[in-house]
Image 1: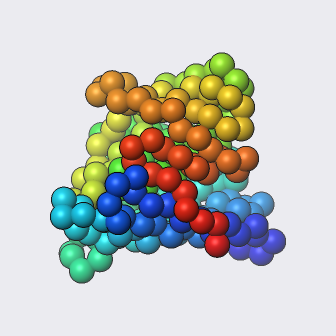
Image 2: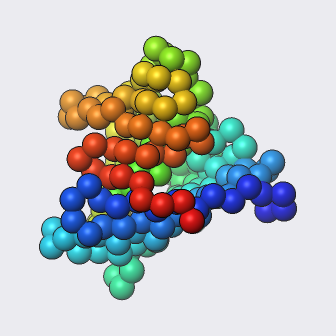
Length: 189
């Protein structure tokens, strides 16, 4: 993508040795994120790669994810309005209404709704995401809520079904800096 702005970021798991390296390219035609994630303890013994392509307004268009060394991968596509299909074009009605994706092994996917929604301080929005569990790469719909606590620096993430909630610090680009008990940014490359 010509004229791109490229960002590189790395995160570590809060505990353990897990690590992610992300390359994010933003251009006038859209956004592409590519990353490698390595699990960091006996319970998370995996390595994965993913690629997410979005339109210029951060609506997810495609997701590809693969567990390294296993025959486990997914390729899904969206119309940007909440209708999903497999790479072969088969509909995925269980994901209807999801605009964003949430891969459980990465803090990057929090950036997608943060950038897309553009909430003002004090505003919140409930959304449906295509949730990807790791390492099985199982897909399901999940209801989540994002609340802008401090514009440009702090959001509250809530899983509507489970009640899980964290206040996550972000940078000016909407990338997670600190996600308590889960991830912390360690470098910009």
